[in-house]
Image (cartoon, rainbow, N blue to C red; front, side, top):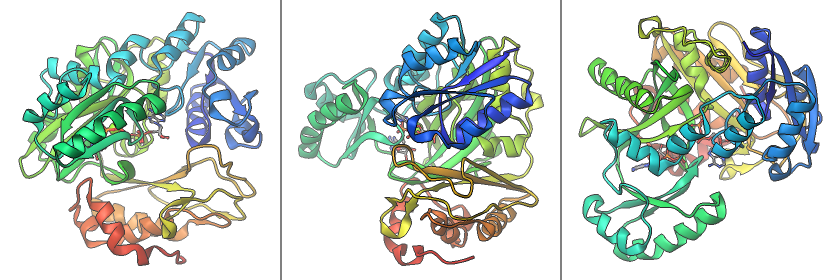
Length: 457
Ligand code: ADP
Ligand code: ADP
Ligand code: MG
C-alpha cells in the first residue's frame, strides 16, 4: 500500500483525493501556487509545498518543481487528478523515473490511449466501432480531401491532442473544410504543442455515453455507463447514470466493448471510454478514452457504492483488482451538475470573486464535492469549476426532484454561479423525459436565455 501521496492538482479534485487517501491511511502532501495559499486542499493536507507563481505553467504544470516537492517530503507516489498533467505521458514517465508510483496508467498507455488518433486505432483493432473517418493522422489537406468520401458533410476536424472540448471544428462544405484545415493545424499546435489532426463524420443527433473502467494490467471490470449529453461548447454540464437511452442488451454490448479495449491495451488504473450513441440508428461509436479520473466520477460512485479514487490508490499500490464484474452492481439513479463561477445570464462570462456566505445542501442522497468555504476568494487563473452537486435516488424522476430540492438549499453569496441554469434544466420537460442529445442544450440556451436570471431559492 502507498504510504505518502503527493497530489499534483488543486481545487475540488485535490480535496477529493486527499479524502480518499486519508480514508486509506495514506499521508498527503498538497502542492500549491502563490494564488492558492488559502485554498481548501492546502488546509486539508498533512503537509504543503509551494511550487511557484499563479500561472499554471510555472506551478501546476511545472514537473521539476512537483518532483522536487515529492522527493523533499518523502512521498512514494503522485496522483495527477484531472486536467493539468493528468494525461501527460512524459509526466507519468518522469514520476516513475524518479522512483515514485504514478497513480494512473504508464506513460506508454497514456501515449497510446491519451493520443486520440492512436486510441481510435487501438479501438478499431479491438473490434470497438469508431466514428467513420480517418485512420491515423491526416497530415495535409490533400489527405483530408480523400477522407471526405467516408465522412461526407458536415465533417469534424479534431486535434489528436485535444481535450476539454477544445480543438474541434466543423466544416459544412468543401470550401469551409479547405479554409478550416490549416487553421485547425495552427491552432492545435499553439494550444497543445501538437498540430496533429484527424477527421470524423459528424453524428448529428448523438448522445454522449461513456463507460467507467477499472483495471490492474491483467484484469478489468466496467462500472457501467454515465450519460453526459447535456453539454455547452462540447463541455459537460450535467451528467447522470444510468443512461435512459440504453436497452439492457445495448448496455451490455457497450460496457463489454470498453472492457475489451482496456484488456487489449493492458490498461491499469481508472479510465473512461467515451462513445457517441446514435439513437435513431441504434449504433454506438468510440470517440476517445480519458486515461484518468474524470470530473463526473461521483455519479458512478453513487450508483455502485464504490470509491473510485480509493480503488485507483489500491491498484497503484500494487494490489490486484479486488472486484469481479459480478461485484459491481447498480442501485438507483444519480445526477451531477457542475457549478462554475460563471454568469449564465451573461453568456457564461467568468465571475471569480469572494464567497460571502455559503449554505451547502444536505440530507438523504446529496453529496457536495467542492473547495469552497465562506470567505474563500476564487482566483482568476484556473478552471471555473467551484463545486459539483451530486444526488442519488431510487429512480431518475426522484433524482431530478432531489436535484431541484438540493439546488433550492444551495446558496453561494458573492459569486455568480451556474445554479440558475440547473434549476431551469431540472424543471424542463425534455430534461425530465430524458429527451436530449449533445446539441440540445445549446439550442435550449438560445431559446431560454430569459429564464437564467437568478432566483432564490
Ligand atoms: P471530463 O470528461 O472529466 O469532464 P474534461 O474533458 O471536461 O473531462 O476535462 C476535465 C478537466 O481537464 C477540465 O478542467 C478541462 O479543462 C481539463 N482538460 C482536459 N483535457 C485538457 C487538455 N488537453 N488541455 C488542458 N486541459 C484539459
Ligand atoms: P474532448 O477530448 O474535448 O473531450 P471528444 O472527442 O470527447 O473531445 O468530444 C467532445 C464532444 O464533442 C462530444 O461529447 C460530442 O458532444 C462532440 N463530438 C465529438 N465528436 C463528435 C462527432 N464525430 N460527431 C458529433 N459530435 C461529436
Ligand atoms: Mg471527451
